[in-house]
Image (tube, rainbow, N blue to C red; front, side, top):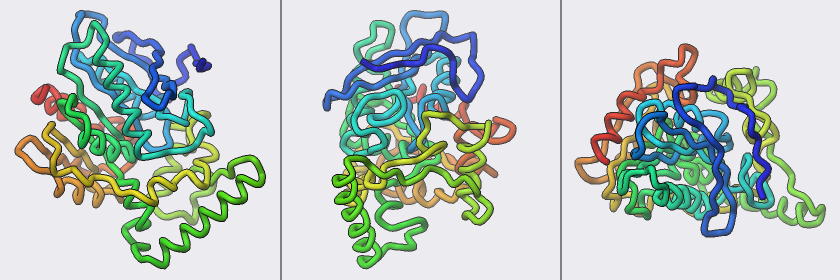
Length: 321
């Protein structure tokens, strides 16, 4: 039984013009997931969207903001905490897995597909940051999805395997990373606990420019949340085993549902979106470049909260459901 917080504890203001409630559902691994559900106050049948991300964030941050906004535009939405994070179940916490994360998205679709007030065959998904990649990976397997939107996306398997900007894309660096993570597994077993890798740095003064942007979101009032891995002590050191040993997008060229990739032109992660888009086939795939936007601007719209292209996201989804 999950212990859910009932009061509003999001990093964004509540929109009283839409309904909201906490919901739970289980995935095929038996893990119970917690989600915030939003829906319009008028109407009885809605197209639906499942939303998650960024990687290491919680539903009280970006995904919840997206979910509430899309509900104000006529959709029933859920923003869910992935397995092992936030209010969702799964032990130990602070782990991740490509298979389980894809299953999380699929179980959210299972849940939405069985709601009486969701229009049949009108379900889409939105993934933010690392979950943009997971959204596209889910679209490779789940034919129920009508539209997939990946916003400011990361290919988490690529960044773990190759390092940022592919600077460590060589066998020796990968081998040394494997040695370190396996030594940590031995130590964790001996200690009966899991060492944490640390979230976003507490002192960004000497950090790369894009880490400073993460700090500005996760470690300040703008986006800090006590359940967010990135805001606090981070993943388990050994959490990236699945990402180290597998690659996303093997079947991306076979995705038949519509896909929109949204990226900021000033985002350090832009190359992930551009290269992933090259894998997609068909005339129902679009790439939207947001002028002057950085990676984290698309988390919450940036300083003036105006960088997220919600009009274009809505247009794309409605066009394809």
